[in-house]
Amino acid sequence: MKMRHNKQVNRRGLLIEGADFISRAFGQFMAAAHGIDPADPVTRQQNTFEPRMGLLRPPGAVPEQEFADLCDRCDECIKVCPEKTLFAAPEEYGAARGTPVFSPDRKPCFLCSELYCIKACSTGALQPVDHVLDLKMGTARIDADKCRVFEGEECRRCLDFCPHPGVAIIQKDGHPVINPVECVGCGLCQYHCLHDAQRQAIVTLAPPA
Figure 1 (cartoon, helix red, strand yellow):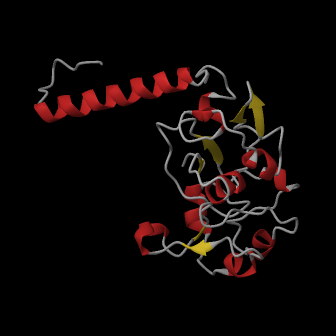
Figure 2: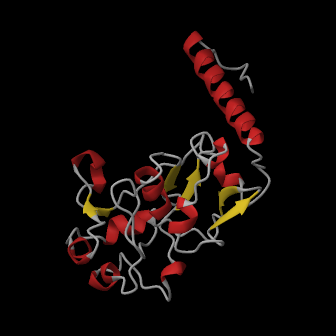
């Protein structure tokens, strides 16, 4: 740990720094134990010990700050979603309340070919894409501690339900690995991991703000 000698460090500060050090060290240990190489651009985002928080927006959403400025909370994208994936953020979402979001635990984005939500947006908050696999709503991560495969069991649900199998989710040494470059963040793998495999081994994280 880096100590700041020019600043008084109280007992609470020491405890916080100590807990942070242990957490990071444990995360590095667990990553190494499961063959996750932090230097590998494909596997480094498997580390779930420092997740980024954020909102999962509809397909085609512009960056968060711009989205917040453009979205007029008209609910049109929510109304036209054929799978009823999108919902208006509730009060506890603070300034984002009323804006469209989705939660893969509740329902993933099924990447309908028509992308009705984008077509319904008249403010430019949702932008068209050439193909559904060009979308970038977020990035999935796998927690090796909760994945059946890392426990030696057979499970292919994340691979079988991924819209881009073998590309967005690959197998490395027999284990599923997310390719963060190709993952569109639809949450299908997370949904089926939770509801079929009865695990919470996958989380879909929003892009950095």
